[in-house]
Length: 285
Image (cartoon, rainbow, N blue to C red; front, side, top):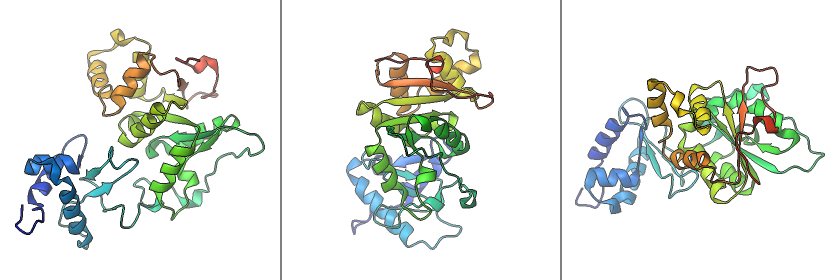
């Protein structure tokens, strides 16, 4: 701590360097304050110190990269990232579509199959961007029954991502989450699902059965863990304890959510996905 009230960032950067080597390379400002200075109340000063540091940094090799995100909830996802390339602060330049790490080509002209002539409930499509190509196909498949909202399609090139997604989450009547290894490990996807569960809105879980992690989840939901190999048991222990997802998966398995429906999806099949009873693993009401 410096006498002028500014935070000494040296221990913060040392903590972030350590975090980079771990499976979840992030820390909240509160965690940094506790780990580095032993006082949670210094979280805001840690944030401000990092803001100033990166605002004044011209880029290039040197200081450790970090990023601040307040999506979708400042309180629940106030995160200092330790392994990305830019800093984006809510009061500075917003995170825009061209900043997505795994970009789609804007020349692709990807669009959803619009069916505007029939009234259908709106559907927020929660997914990892890594699964975007598969998710577009699924979104088109369900467009007969819903009006899917897919971020990569709906958000224009220079529009702000945060505000558009937050508005879509809050206004959509239902949610469809595409479950893969990538989305199961995503804190953002978990928070989106958590919002709909807490607000008792229908959630449709689409399980990619070609994904090894999701295949384990599928079997666990059928109470078939006894068939797991030792390696699969170890992997399931990791999956079932993901932050945020841990509670969601537990509730799904125990059939406590009456607004959750699960569907199998196999992109290798000729007719890989149908919203029909034969794909429903558990449902109610």
